[in-house]
Amino acid sequence: MAAGGVLHAYYKNRQIQVSREIDAIEKNVEHCRFDIRTTEMRMDQLLNRFVIRKQLEQNKSRLHPISLAVVEDVDPTPPSRRNVAAVSP
Image 1 (cartoon, helix red, strand yellow):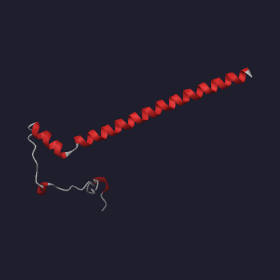
Image 2: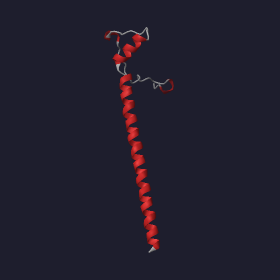
Image 3: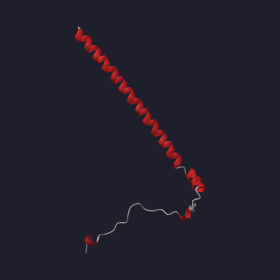
């Protein structure tokens, strides 16, 4: 009976320890999620084109807006080229 009491106390203690570890991990996960949301919000603020434009003006940058007529679409796939060694007759 004494061994049963000791085992019960050991298992109960271990259960409490595991419960505390789970709580600590859940708090860590929530903290990481908060950091992710904060980082995403900060990135959205930094990538806002109006904010960027205002910062450029404040920094007296020489960059200036260009017209849409100057914008050029570029094909991301390179043109197919033949290697000199692979030329067939």
